[in-house]
Length: 263
Image 1 (cartoon, rainbow, N blue to C red):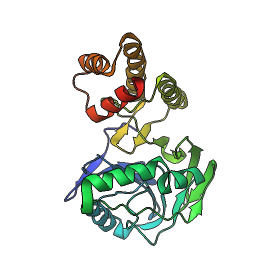
Image 2 (cartoon, rainbow, N blue to C red):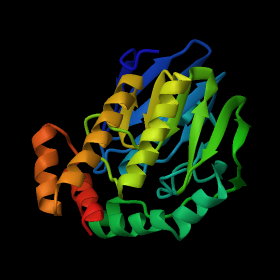
Image 3 (tube, rainbow, N blue to C red):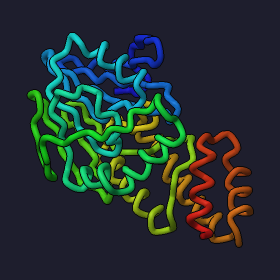
Image 4 (cartoon, one colour):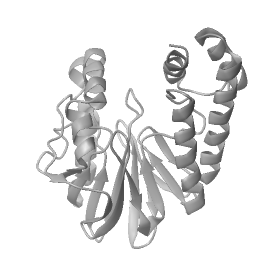
């Protein structure tokens, strides 16, 4: 499936890009919110499973309206635990570590920070997980998923559409990278996607991407390590990265990376 082969439904706030695989469809909801969230709906035989949740009230009501003619069987809550008013009566699935991440870990810290920034338009309530899942195959709504636990939460393989969901990629966007070892870990994960020959890579903050984008990101991370090794402080590091990647978005992510590398 080519990442650009979709039909678009314009909504009041966001837009829905729909990939048709025949017996199964992928609905990629671009929220256009303040943190560029993406939410994914896998639909088969009138049933649907949602991956992640919008966290701004305006998007929550918009997406619920879009889903009204589908029978939503569950929501996979991985890295985005806020927005618990979204489909509040539908089963919520997560690994134990993802649950902890959202309730008391790094995810909860992010939720608190977003609450301070966005105030009442942000739904800071945390999803109540009704179904704890582990690694491996899980079937929800007649759809196969393969769960892979990560340090913070979990990634999701969707075999029927040869796709994988992970938290972040962004081939032309800076990333939060803690250190060289972290960069190497991301590179290894992206290389595994290439080795498995996925058609689509779905992420929480970007439209669906492909293996060419994964390779672009690997090159970026390798260059990031080289630049960090040649610089003495955060400011010179940022200047060199911006010189090499002047059109990249996510300047706040670059600031965080510089802080980590030169703390």
